[in-house]
Image 1 (cartoon, rainbow, N blue to C red):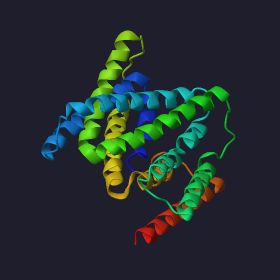
Image 2: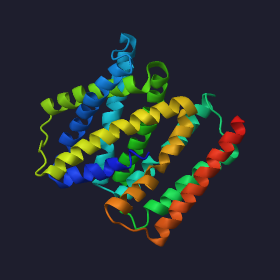
Image 3: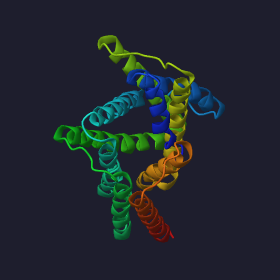
Image 4: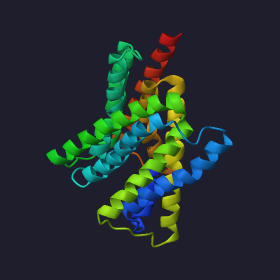
Length: 277
């Protein structure tokens, strides 16, 4: 979550420097390949996977690309804050799937804590009136379903393949899919106009890769549901990053949301440890 908090800031720096969305997306995946290929080899993790895993990897890569596309598309119709609040409902979806399938179990207090965390994030993020559009909300809901599917099925693959290998494969197939899209659909491809733009591209790719690799390593150790709830700390870290890098300040409502989120997140973890004990 700490590393992912730098992703939107880096992306904004790149986009503000004239970088097109498609260049930002494909560069992120290419940077993932450059970082993860030698890392996978040095850790003696398998670079290639069994052929039986290729179809599901392609499907998950398609889900990943569609998730990113739907999120950015929705931002064109409703506020970023509202899009994020809809996407941040994903831990509930993941928890429902794992509970129904009997893979994980949450206590009633933990369910209430998840709702409390989302309430705190709502107070933190939605500090100003948000634009509403049925179409934008619908696209965000589609993005939410894609995110739930991506997290759940990638978590399953990580248990079999490993986090570094799965992220390497997803970066590879995502690059292939994006290249195919560029070949058949005319899109704008513009590079940054200054050095800050290149720095934004580099930061966006590096922090994106690190955040997902560490997330799925953690999910393998503590469970995909708990990891998903902990991932909701990303807005908290993003707020802290904004305080120091962008010289922004918290309003009273934002500060209240920050504290509420921390309290309910702590409650979720405390009761989780008690149940495990």
